Image (cartoon, rainbow over all chains, first blue to last red; front, side, top):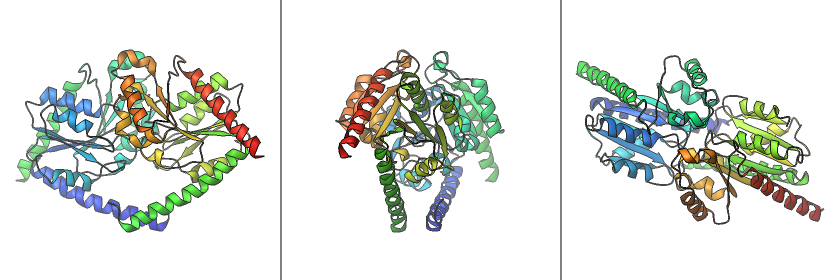
Length: 228
Length: 228
């Protein structure tokens, strides 16, 4: 149980975060940038998914990425090597990104006028799910090597994510993973959520993922035009 | 940056934790119970490792387990099915175990006189590494499917863990994972740390793991006898 002082501090921190997130969301709307907060365990393939997306539709869309982490610049370096703007956010030991960190990372510029902005959160299924970053949607990734018991074990993220990607399905022949059971748990936690089965290695499901991004972006742009 | 009030709350919480952890450590020493805090990403094989250990040396040692999680009782159920005492600690959304939670879980009894007590932490590589639970050693697990860039990306746990298990090596033929590079990063972060390469599926490395536990337990018991 938290003490009153701990609860007050936590509430104030969340309130500040949500205010900054609202400003970010407004700015992303003005620029018609679709923003995706990618959340998964370490090593489920967040960076590989962004790489596969850039390879698939990098000529059609202006794509950028912010990558969260505690130890290295590796993810941002991998993405910059593909020719997109990418900036690492080092959290100083913190286990998740927050709106203030995202705002600070965008402040030096270089991310204006994008169609798609990926925010790769710090690896983890609990803390990263709890903060609004001004994104359009939270996307959860679950690799088949992590086991089919994860949705009910980590209900917070899988009930909040508008979209869940089952990743690394090229490894399905070698692991015990009941895809139907996972789909049933995800549907139970989040009836409106969508599931896409992917492999960044073989390209399975990447077209469907990019089509989903395209549809979401078109919807956002048309709403923005209508408001103007 | 944390405010002064946030820093004070955080410091007080850690101080309380360390006081309870010291009492737990004293109690575990009196009972000559070797206590291991298992830390890894979700799905790296913590529960499977405990299962493999029980199958290998469950007749030689009295083994028990506490399993941390936010959503289900699944891990404790799997372990009770093997005939060992196991209790789930549900954190109420919290991303790691702490000494108070461990103490509360032990209070109803049923874990006295054990040789080995596994504390399976909540899945994650950041927050679980930061709390003393009164354990003898923190053991990190890293599955080959998570990628070989993880030690430097999550230096906190890999520099603190006395022992790192590389898990799921049966999947090495199907993934890109440079074992030598991982060994080099681990040695750089923690020169005194040991590395064991394992597969709970094939049994690779499980004998070496159990031998390490046996050596550690013998050392702890002999020190306890000498003190008495």
